[in-house]
Structures are given as structure tokens and as C-alpha cells.
Image (cartoon, rainbow, N blue to C red):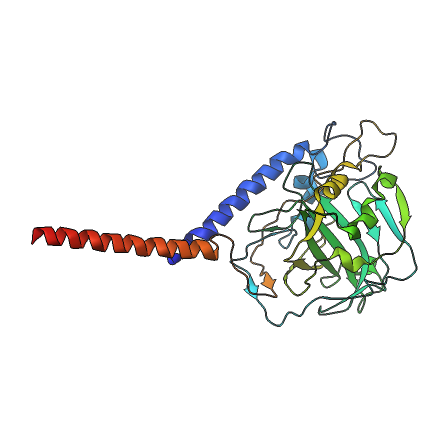
Length: 342
């Protein structure tokens, strides 16, 4: 039985993946609330849906059609365990210094600038922080993250963007280079309680309700936005998930999600607009995620031993127990028949 399941499980995962991919592409046309997808969207040349939606990105941004794109669906049964991958070690995250952050609604996401004194260790190079931003779905929907695990999406995802400061002077110079960027991906899941760390951002959303609005934010402990355990993650080479989609990103996607309350998630989902103030119709900023891209022979590594999703240990024990009972029943039935024949 285990051998048969090993053959079937990848096929089921692929089926779920492609069904979800098709569903999200179809749903993208309706991502705006109360307005057509073609509504005026500031001066941007790309959108997540409509005539400039993600299926059309390669027409204007050729890199978006290349073979090492992000995000991806991480199939845990296919990842390769690499025991040499060390835990991620943030430097300066807990005390970012006195310089204020800038929180902005750029029409595509909520983004917060970060100082270069925030760095990452545990990667091939030293990477300095640039900004963080969010991807989310709409109220009442389960999908909102960009990456998926075994075809399962999360309600939202946090990205913390860094550039290779050992080799390049700034992010503008680094973003074109194959080793230029490193991004931390954090799945956001709903929990029972508010997460105080995220309130440092969420409490300001009403001040950046419309595109192009920004506000200074007092520095806070950014490390608290990340999961507790930074030693368990997936690693692969990919791209920016928005145009121009440069394939310059070393991705670290944490296995453990961070948690928000339902109220906090809904605050993110319903507070900001993709249109500028005074523009009509107003377009709610939601479903700002790219669908998973093909892996195309890339290898996804993990810093920990993974168990493919599917049967749990308890289910496996129950199956084995059921098989044994079945065999015992067949044996007893055969014994009774043989005894009667005698």
C-alpha cells in the first residue's frame, strides 16, 4: 500500500495544483471590489487582473515569462534536505536605530522602508534590508499568499527584501544581478489573538488609505514579525513576484507561519485602495498575489526533514491496523470453512 500511495500522491498534488492555478486565473478578473478591473490604477503599467493583468505581464516585461519565476508551489515530497543550510540570523532587526520607517501604499501593496543596518547572516553573502511588503486575498477567502505548500495557500504572506551589500552598492544596482537579492517569505495564518508586532503597521493603514499616500512610522522590533524558529525553511532560486520579475532572488520561505487575529487580517484586507484619493471608482486593494509559477527543473531545498502532506502518522497506523484486522478476518473465515469441510 505505501508503494502505491507514493505513486499516486504526486499525481494528486499536481491535479490540485493545476486546478487551483486555473481557478485563480479565472478569479483574477474579479479582484476589484465594486469596480471593473480596467479601472484607472494610478500611473502603473501593470495590474493583477484585467487588460494589464498577470497573464499579460510578459508582453511588457519579458523576464516575467522566463523559466525561473516566483512564486512556486512547494511540493514537500520533492524537496531535497540540505543539512548544511544554517539558521537565518537577522542582525539589527530588534534595534533598527533611530531613523523612521516610511509606510506607503504604492497602489500594489502596503510597503515599509527598512534601513540597511538591518542585515541577514546565514546566506552565501551578507544582505542588507530594503523594504518589506504584504500580499493578501480578500475577506472570507482562504487564498492570499503567493507561495503555496502542497497546493495549500495561506491568507497572506509577508516579504522582507534585501540586497547583496557585499557586492553591490544599492538595490538598484543589485536587482538585475543573479545574486543580487534575498527575500524572506513568511506565511501569515489566523490565530486566536492579536499579534502586537503587526499592529505597528496595521494601525497606520487608515493614514495610507489611497495609492501614493505615505506616513512615517516609529522604528520597532522587526524581528517580532518573523516566526519564532528561523532554522526551518525552504530555499530556492527565483524571481521578483511583480514586474519586472528579475530572476535575481534567493528565496527563503519559512516553514512556520506567523499569526494574526482574524480582525487584524480583515484590517489588511479592507483598509487600503489601489486608486488615488479622489479617483472614481474606488478600487479596493485585494488579491494582490501572483499565482504559482512552474518549477521547470529547479530544485527546492529544505533546512529540515520534511514529511509530505497526506496521511498523518495516526492515519498510517490506522491503515496498517485495518489491514492486519482484514488479514486476520480472512484467516479466520478460511479456518472456519476448512473446519466445516472436514
